[in-house]
Image (cartoon, rainbow, N blue to C red; front, side):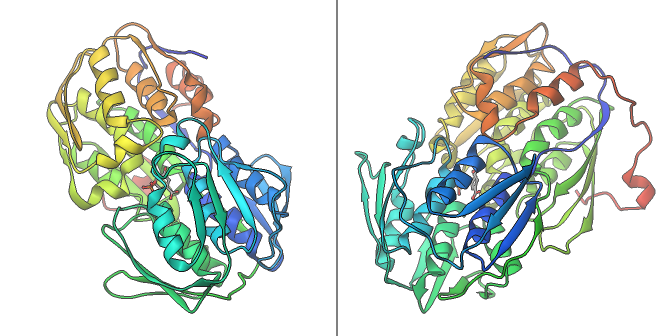
Length: 449
Ligand code: S3P
């Protein structure tokens, strides 16, 4: 399907976004290993997370869906059954990599398959450590790529330094570590989202963390069943936060948002570019911080995004690049070569689409140099089958002259059901506008620049 977008009028509204994708995957998996029934509210009912739900069902786990965005997982004390057929991970690398870790601990053979995009994505990064732990993994693809045949069991804990900054690889090793003899310890080159560690702790699995950031897990533990509420996904909220940020005087409030510090560096970038951002953590009782973000837009200025922060805002880079095109001066994104191995080559996709819309962009090996401010013009842009490219360029369309058409936009369902409805509300606002600052009344200091 095609998504048509036109220029947004003044933005002054309040929204919520669907549940966090990364947390939803992990909550379902760890609940499935637990010793009882776990109700997971706010579960992201999007294609990617449903792939994980289906994978767990294929392994003998009962998962009920009593109402939208709630699943009830019937944990079976780490007992999984051999799947009757291939496990189809669709477009979801998180499903494939986390499942590879989980299946590495099982004595039966399983085969993980994916769509054409997932079948090109690097899997060697999980295969190497899982083999070191004792699993037999055969990559049927020509470049250590999917389909993956995993035959596990009898794992041994290892010490492993993950050479790429990847929360999926860390998660896979920690899940395998839960089934390994002794202790498994991982260190990261750059710190990535810590949802696996937090979710394990929430389910009373003993993990350790040393000062240098090494994370340890002991095998042979059974997670304690518990209920959990998944907060809204900050990566999804970033589309709307960016839209408000680039519009001088634009104002947006997002409630019930995940505010885990390994995910919030994107807010720091928007502040650096000149937006006013306030965040209020309201609750940490389930270990994952959640709260409110309020943003007021301005004429943004370019910034440099590089180094360690890149790993913690990797999914937000497509829409931040759009912000860069609308900001004055140069925005440089470096050290982001991981973007080349996402659902599509996101560096090439962003450069292509920004140019089609009239921006001046230089493609770097590991990022982009964007010269703003560009008077963006509406155009037909491909999504490249990539949900984040589709959504980022729908946002670009809100600030372009004329109409923008995002082709093959159905891929947004991978992570964000409801995106179309919210963009419609941005283009044709109906509801009451929120004109007084809300977080200000909680007397919070603005974030430091
Ligand atoms: C994710 C980690 C990131 C991110 C992806 C979700 C996760 O990928 O891009 O959307 O849930 O662990 P990598 O681990 O490959 O960096």
